[in-house]
Image 1: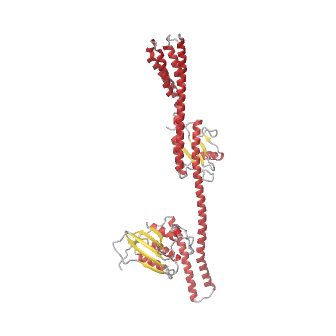
Image 2: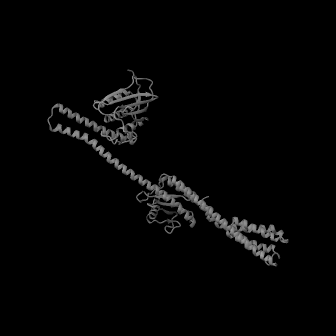
Image 3: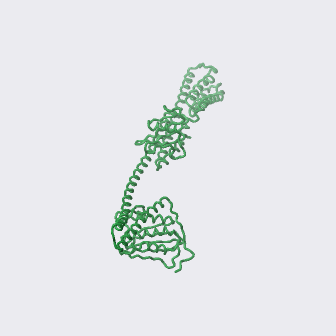
Length: 509
């Protein structure tokens, strides 16, 4: 049973319970008197006083102060009337009986009142301990919460458990504007009047609603969630009855803890948003500068060559060279645009490989042909075993993967460096490796080279840092993995591992 239920259980039937306890007290005293009637004719009527004192003590353990006072008074009266000679009168002959009667009444009264007070103090101590435990539980659960939604779930559950009330939270959006829906139950849309009252509470820093000074005709109570730096929002609760001063203090502490937890998560979110905005701004500037630079070079080449062709008479050899410059610059522009489009497709999840059986020799030949000019000054080798089986891949995607890896090696290796393409097949997996004997990857960049727009600090070759991130995306679209490492004797190696079952036939020579 919640603390509220213990304090105000069934308030509508409280009067009936109150009257019932008085009737039970009268009945118990009457039954004891009837049982003790045989002792009225003997000299043991003093024993009856002890029995009645014992009964009053028992009643004080279970009944309230009013019932105990009634029991004490009735016990004294009936003991006088039925047991102290002369019987059936309120007259007492003996002086010692008068003293005993007076002492009996005082002892019964004090005993009952003191016992009741001790019981009340014990009850208050127990309730205080339960409230402390409830606050400790709330604090512990809130400390475990790592975002606003979890804080709200904990708060709703704890309010329901301890106060038997449903709680709804109307929070701000970070700009001191209340959001018109529940953060954890987005299907709950507050009424226009609820929002208006909540906005008034939020602006005026005052609780309103039922049992409050303002908007008391409302069925709900609106509490401001106060923070030290920002106010997270407004709490809406439907109380069944007005909280006592003691319970309201407990309630106020309860929502203060919730407010502090919400404020903490709000500030954390705001700090995270600021960090993301700063990083986004930094990334935007870097990307803008990088793309501008990468696009400016081929565009300038095309414009310069075109201008020469238009405004000057050149011999056929020079014209041919200018045409070639324009074509090479166009290829570079196309590669940049293609990489940007591929990254967009990867991020939107629109890459769906069209898997089929292909000869890896065709992929390698196509890439070698496309990069023949770039590979002229390098020692380029291809290692493909004889009778290598067909592999199950998307030809176009793997072609771009191999193109980007080889082109990346060309950009980072000195002239006359060795660049090797090696393929193998084992345990239903297809392995595609590109390695070189160049400078290798900087140690601090190995963990980041597949991140989009990442470029090493020492990178002086240009590019916008998309090639290897596209490689990773295309390989993962095949259900595979890609690894980058430095070779023991110098140079870099990128290894792609793609699931590809072994076909029942092999390519013939």
